[in-house]
Length: 228
Image (cartoon, rainbow, N blue to C red):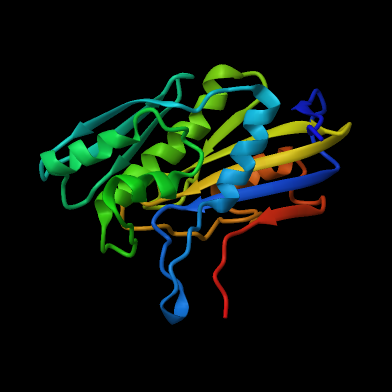
């Protein structure tokens, strides 16, 4: 059965849904590898169904070299995102990153892995983490560019972080739902500082959380974990 989901005219929901991507958060305990972008992917799926917006990656522009190296990802819907790499980006890495063009910017970690073969944060593999960051930020920015009156976007506003925070209200089967999507990412592609993941009401999220009543309503926090 197709979900009855659309953008809402309500100022806030009676229930919340929150999902994030920890850009570069790939290693777990006991040697497990995890994908910590599932929460963001799930929320982006809801937002795409509500809006019909395409998140296809149209461009991946790269500034190579050791100084001021970055990826700039653009979607066909006008979204833009940037991710920097602390130790530079080579011309070969720029060619590898170009394989993201044409893909839907929904599963950001999977796309980065598809381009580079693997991903690891904590300063180990800054280039694929920078690409994931650019993809996730471009996806979030796409909704604001296309529906500026329905979506609010904020910076993480945490020292060293460069992720985005997106908020809106959806009607799901007639129920207003406050929705928040986050990319937790750091400057340089080091890996995520996830001090404001989930529905933690701090830093750049605080005003938006209060506006959407996510600081007081029950919420589903969609999270990716590998446990044993």
